[in-house]
Length: 243
Length: 243
Image (tube, rainbow over all chains, first blue to last red; front, side, top):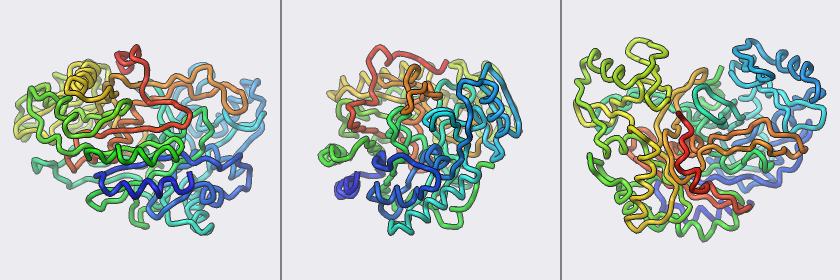
């Protein structure tokens, strides 16, 4: 998609409050030790204030978070999941809903058996916020711009059918927009005080990446008439809001 | 934003799998009896296959789902919420987490005390899927194109900080993408079998609408290199997946 979003931008100032989200293709198969920042900077034409959403899968691969497991051995699969779990909330057949060491509550404690090398499972990154910061720094080190980075994964949730992508880590991007003290149009305090921006970014990115199409990252570019940006001050970059 | 996304489209074929999301301004203050389809068709330059995300607030207003309540009277507020609840899951101070008649589990049974006329509260639409279909039909009746419509609201969720927008109803748009039987790149069945597309659309739209800026709707326009569309076959349009 090199250049395409830049081309796009020329037409955007006429559009109030617009977000453009594009899948990043050409990252290629990711292997342990790969520098995702370099791969992404080379595959996408990034600009300052862009937000790059990267799926957990390639982050785990790049960080070598793969373990050998016989996919046909349900007991072995269960043991891998239980090793990653600090607390099991529910079991239904092979499915285990568990809390991870990070504090995430998700299926199989985040252990992923799809889109991984044969005979392997992918574990969540040990510190997804640090992973995001590393990618952010890697993009800059590769001569890229200053971007925000969100690491996304696919979680279920109670009470609602289907799964959505959420953020498991971020750097250089506002994780939660705090509206406490903000008034509505009628001058009353807003009921909604904290908006999980990073989760909305992860969900938006999933729409262009898909689950079955092997697009491992996306770039979100925003133009806001009021000068707002999705990027936040650096002091919030390292904030970890999900543990 | 009239015309702007159309202008945008000219540059898009060079971009693989891109989504453009813009807030719809100029809808104006919505009053009971207003035809949202006409208001939205007049405010946005829509195209076939666009998806229009409309916040519950203006749908409830247009449908006259407002009740009088003294905002200062916590007892009266509680009674309104309890009337809307079929089951109370949790109480924390004034906050009530309850299941609605639709089957949604959310704060205050979906009763909204912000951005409503003084001395009033907004209740959820009785049948949000029908509301979405009505808006879809209204846009077509106003000479607009065939679009998908998603009604969004802001819900919290367990285990994660912050709130996100989710879909409470839809028409003419795929609610849940069923990937059962789909293989991953390695030929294994995907673990993730159902993706809640409408919730991801609602979350993406929230990013441009904001909570404090009075943008009540957004248009999502997608271009997919593989010809996929976010729109689904009509038979799925009426499907209600959240009850």
